[in-house]
Image (tube, rainbow, N blue to C red; front, side):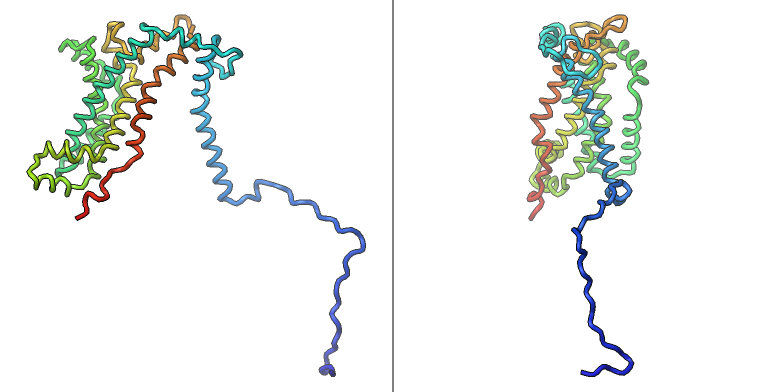
Length: 308
């Protein structure tokens, strides 16, 4: 085969491998600058979440460890010889049982009253259209922003006039009134999720609006009522200032007030007994959440209710 004019054919050359052994080069230096922006944002978010988690875990860790330490201090440390003496010291009728019973009666009665009044107030706000609904809701929302300490002086004066000071039912009434605004907001939002067509079907069958509310709407919004009940109970259970101001008899004080007795004079605090009592004090709230957590996890069972 002849070559074309002006071109020279040559055989391709192949590179020969080196005669010595082949060595790998040094690995690339690891540096955070090699990460992508998305990876750096994710790591920053994870670090922030770890800091927030530590802020919640450390007090709980101190609570558990100090309750088992006979010489507990404010430091988070594992006790050398764990003991239950702190629980035995507070496991008495005067320190634990009577105050806990008072708290259950006070907060339980106020919670029932709050949920009942919130349901009755949320029904017309959810079902009837009016130009006054939004201003009324804004007024309720503003009332939730008022600090409880700002209104305790006139409330105390009113309770003195109507002879409600140092009464359990008077204190429960004020606790229910203080939690009612936010409970109405929550209840109204949950009630908006119940279709009106279900009420119209009940009205067709001759039901009145109280029967519709108690037999149709409230059973369908069980998870919403559970949320309102838990929120109201927890906020009342940890309230210290209201029963401290309105209750005077030691045998009527709830546990949120008697916990103050562990703080002695001259800065002396029984940290071990305080931690043990705090664990016992938190037990009813935890049990309440565990017992009704299944209802909270469910949704409104309306999937087949509105199908024709």
